[in-house]
Amino acid sequence: MLGYSSSPVNKTTIQNPCKLDLTKVRGFNYTPAFIENKQKEDCWVKYNKSVIEHDLDLAKSLNLNQVRVFVRYNAYQLAKDSLAGRLQHFIRESNKRGMGVMLVLDKRSPWDNDTTLRPLARQFAQFLIKAVSGQPGLIMWDVMNEPDYPTKPKELTVKNSNNCKFMAKLFHELDKKTPITIGMAYLDGMEELADYVDVLQYHDYEYTRERIRKNIDRAKKFAAKVGKPLINGEIGCICRANPYDVALEEFSKGGVGWYIWELMIVRNGWGVVHGVFYEDGTVRDPSIAAAILGFYRKRDANILPAVPDYEGWVTKSVDKGNQWLLDPNASWSEGLDIAETCANLMESAELVPMRTPPTRDVRMLREGNTDMAALKVLMKKYIEILEPYKLKKKS
Image (cartoon, rainbow, N blue to C red; front, side, top):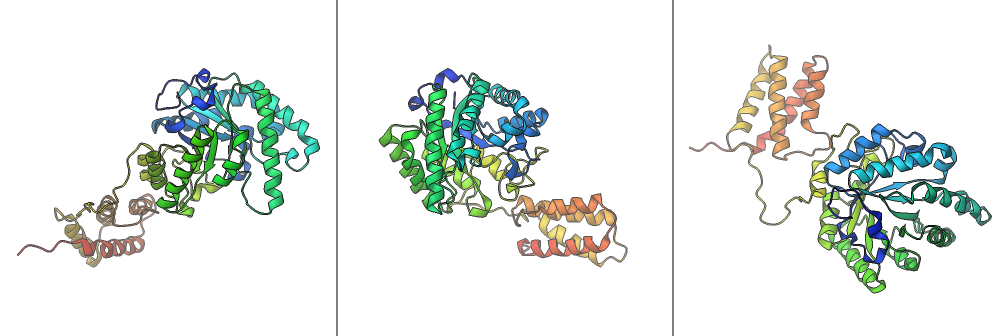
């Protein structure tokens, strides 16, 4: 049930992880939009059922079928009495929407730096397994996120690796039904710890299609060699030149299941470079949602650019804008209408960057006080952009 089905996930289908078909995983990492990224435990400490259910509905609208969510030891410490119920609610609501859940145990636990505290790890694992192991929507345990990042100093990666091995053995001992994975940042780390997991996982934020493809090819060959299923647990980052639509297209073509980072645009964290949805359900970049649904931008030689002045609307709007600028008694409302028409032409024909859409600038003027000076500045800007796209009149 890890494919495109909207029916609840049946955990009995995954007891033998080597037989899993993870190529159809279409997943997302999840942090509620109101949470600070560095405080992921607040997802559980400040748990809000209505927000969770709303966000899961957004994910379902894109046919996403897997959730990767962090549950840190600190959340256990701060919300021990309510954590089990909150985890159960999250997994239950995900399962209702046909989504499986991967629970991720991050670094930053007491036993990471002091092995004498490993009994606390056992206590935490027992708590989690008792709370959710019986839930049909639980798909995997990710026993540590990116133990191989950062790559230096060497002592740190060795320590993290040893802790990974300990946690993998612990969860295999305590929960013999649920597969184990480790969210490795790099392929080298994935290969190094392959013996300790049921499902291979690596993260990929590469900056060219060729590099993404090479990693996919290497990962698939290694997975075939060791006979274990493969997923990618994190893709998509604006500031790393890893566009969602590019990465999603390559992983879909490559036949490797994926989890984007992340579903929500988290305002107090990585939201400036990650995320699909704002908290109100709008999106920053529709191409991301389209790519998740399997629709990709055309980038080959046979492209057909839009001609916004095909029916003369660019010429008409530029002329009307210039006339409005010259009118000493220019109308505020008429100017806004001309500016909005110009903005619509620019956006629909993709003549401008959409970092802040032109129609947003017009909307801000409409919703504010009358400011003719600002509107004139905007009108001149839009006319300057549209002028080169005017078609010459046929003689």
